[in-house]
Length: 217
Ligand SMILES: [Zn+2]
Image 1 (tube, helix red, strand yellow):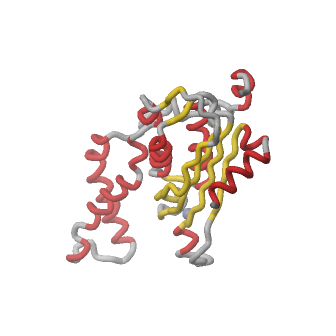
Image 2: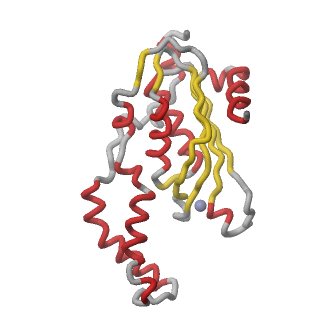
Image 3: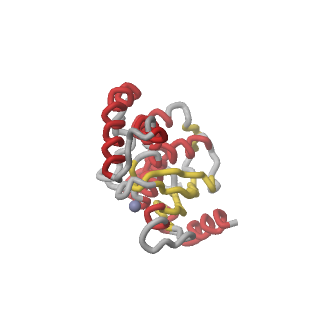
């Protein structure tokens, strides 16, 4: 087991470590208050697209779209601290823990269209483990925000590192960006793969290879 001082020095700089301190930027009450203005904005969008917002099929569209967009970004209503409560256990388990094929549905912050795909997470515990369902909850909180795939990948890895101080963490995301698929090159099956490796996953090729082999199996 690495001494804690050593693993501390390998943790990401405080500049990227924000998951525990971050505040909710939206509440359920905020949702209710902002719904009318969001819906009005969607009415403008419909007009701007050359549509008639008064035509029957579109009458309720601004409200539906506003409500849907709030749902797609509900990660702003949660913070990582809520998820971690009561979910970290002391355990002498020292084998790699892997959860793969976690579905994600996110929104590209450059085009406001969906990103969807799968996340694979692995970590090597250092006396602490996290309830397995909580890994998926961390993914959910960060993915239900406006994102770029690189940041999403790193945020998940950093949150797990902060929570558990494990020997190492690996996160791989394979995702399809609708902004790439529907416009520009229009490559139907193109996928973007990003990864963040921390601790022994970064330093030890054997550990990293074991992780990559297990998520592909
Ligand atoms: Zn995009």
